[in-house]
Amino acid sequence: MSPKPAIPPHDIEIFESAAEPTETDNTGTDHAVEDTWKADVEEYPELPPEALQGIAGRFVELATHNSEADPAAVLIQMLARFGAEAGRNPYIRVGDTRHHSAIFAIVVGQSSKARKGTSYAPVDKLFQLSAFDYTNPCTSSPGPLSSGEGIVWALRDEIREWNKKAKEYEIKDPGVEDKRLFVIDEEIAALLQAAKRDGNTVSAILRRAWDGNSIQPLTKNDNNYRCSEPHLVAVGHIVQDELLTLISASDCFNGFANRFLFCCARRQRRVPFPQPMPENELKEIQKDLKYVLTVAQSMEQEITFDDEARQLWINSYDELTEAAPGRLGAVTNRSEAQVIRLSLLYALLGGSDRITYTHLRAALALWSYCRASAAYIFGSQASNKEHQRVIDALKEHGSMTLTQISTKVFKYHKKSDELRQLLTQMIESGTITQKTIKTTGRSRTEFTLTSAK
Image (cartoon, rainbow, N blue to C red):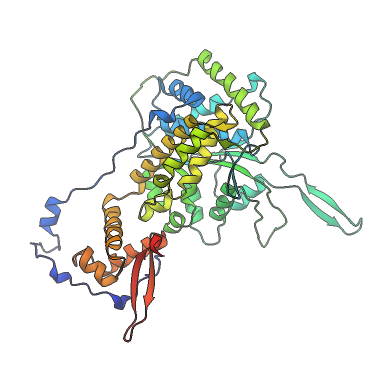
């Protein structure tokens, strides 16, 4: 269901006849426009080499040396799995909020030949560490992530019931002691379909799980189970067209989508006979990985920035917090938190209890790839240009009515319903604000940039 327009219909006058006439056929096709139209296509993102740092960089090079797998997809999934294994003990504090090493990611291919599954296979092999006396693996599941209650049940606390006769509580279910759960859902389309159904709680529960908050679903059948301090890491695979078809506007704007890191993936080269990773080189990385995992799991402490990393964070903060317009802005506006978590992962992979310049630089580099991926997936360049035109006009004029935006920004060439939809989207994303101005006659609606409130 499309949202109700935020703009009162009486506040606009659109003079479509003011547009210059062009020759059309009996289908209404405007040939002058059709002949000159050219699609604005986002460039495919490139992974900055700074993201391939430390153990992660060594592994990605090994995993993709003789493979069709995408390095960025291998990297994001390796970091996600490592974060699941590392657990909740180490954390970064931002104000009163704690950020742990849990991330969500969606690997997005343009087609079924993007080798999304190929990119996870070496990661799965990397974390087969039993030969190295690694005795504390997290729980891993293939999904699907289609039920919020199912997620809570997989991480449930001990369930106790009151025995009236004995007048004491009895353990009905021992629960799950280890709250670490890694889900690799290679058909995450089912999650997006489920999230759109009325009454489905999966979107809300995943948002709370990403935040690390305790969860207790209120259901009519069984409301006595809960999950305390979950450490859920989720990775999904999907094709771009399917993602754009299934993800709802609500999930783009309600904070669900921006908890995921979007990672474009494609086949890097054609390798008719891919070879497995060389065992000797893999074992060297596994040996180092087991060591840093053991260190990370024993760190029950806050991880902080060193001086150089702190200065880099200050220097990057303005650009990092600058919001993009429209849907792209909505799915990327959790950038600071995502970079914080990525920098923690790089530090833990380095066996460090401090975030250094190198760790933060790697996190910023990977975020830039995820941000560019989101732009490639969601960012209609034409649509974003329209948002930017409105923003530039409001910067110049301070506030404008709908009629003024129509005449001064779009020169009467934007249809009434399209303009209302555009401004409604900008309001929903927090880019602009509307206010009603009372006059001696009919009141009017004005729009201003949110930062100018």
